[in-house]
Image (cartoon, rainbow, N blue to C red; front, side, top):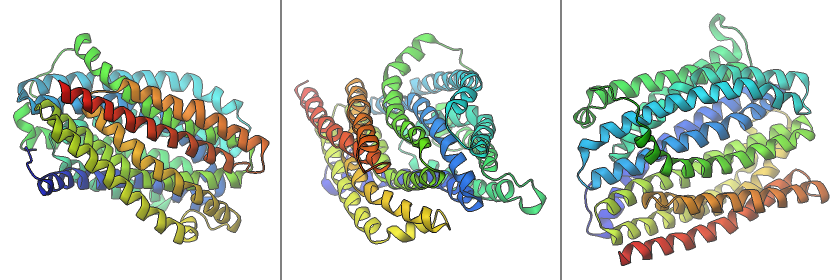
Amino acid sequence: MQQTFTTSGRLKQFAIILIPILVTQLALSAITFFDTNMSGKFSSIDLAGVAIATSIWIPVQTGLSGILMGITPIVSQLVGRKQEDKVAYQVNQALWLSILLAVIVLGIGYLVVPGILGAMQLEPEVRRVASQFLAAISLGIIPLFAYTVLRSFIDALGQTKISMIITLITLPVNVSLNALFIYGFWGFPRLGGVGAGIASAITYWTVLVIAIVIIHKKHPFTSFGIFHKLQGMSWAAWKDLLRIGVPIGFSIFLETAVFAAVTLLMSSFDTATIAAHQAALNFATTLYMLPLSICMSLTILVGYEVGSGRTKDAWKYAKLGIGTAVILSLITAVILFMAGRQVAGLYSNEPEVVALIQHFLIFAIFFQISDAIATPTQGALRGYKDVNVAFMLAFLSFWIIGLPVGYVLANYTDWQAFGYWIGLITGLAVGAVLMLMRLVKVQRKFARQ
């Protein structure tokens, strides 16, 4: 990365950082998409089972990964201050922390998941698929968390193209493994939705190995010496990382967990409604990759400019990113409105399920417009290392406003399952406005300093 002096220069650097991140996020989302899509083509029972399993897995995975992503603003600000010699130590500590978090997740998961699934009103086969999917994917938790640290390090240096290449290599690996383990091609066992969990676990190990090789051998990563010396664990370093990472992780957890809560609450509806909700949510998550990628780009760019003491440039990047997200959200809204039935048909061959998916997608349009403001704004705030207020606003948006409103609409009005989506849209819209106000306040504070 380098200092920019003109609007065109900022646009160019923003695009250089953003486009590979977007491709990477779309590819990562495609892994979940193919898990859901290919399981749904196997049967609606497998689609519902994978839906329940991912509603438990995704909040944990994204929340703890968010904690580890706290290394991004740390590294970007160190690079902005020309303190590259301190980077390897910070990355090593983050790797140790990733292993510890993974072990804790495995231990807690094996203790509590059976009870959670047992308490839900699920058909026995749906419960079996969900349980075995979680057991399979748990084999990939350690490499997934370690890769999150390495990818955050790569991206913080502005080398987002490398992350893109790694992910694009592993995407066909995951799809191929899905074909083998879900459908039983070439003599492999025909496992249905459970096979998607096995395929994902193997993919996580593959992506970690590729990242380690690249960082160890390719410039500019070799100059940092990440793997040249084994650093001992340091609670002081973990404390600094957790101070930034925990609010980020919990903000992400609160957002993903509320969707998990909605999916679990929907277990009282029939299997077709659960499957349709999950399919629509899966596609909405794919659209979410646009604002999320801009969010991650702004964390890197704003962090670099703040570390260099150029707060005016940091603010210009923030406005550029948020404006871009809003424009893209309006474009995707038009496309989704016009092609909703075709999108629904990607997830199921059953007419009843397709019709329900199409209805859910209408609400996804409004949801992603609010996301276009809230998510990039969070990314800019992370670049300033201002993370605590964003965490509280996430709690307010989803758990104080969104879920309660959704529950009332779903259970006491004719909206039924759609009421949950209306509630979440309401909460996110309020959060987006408050988040934007916080960013303006933080920028003014840094400008005065």
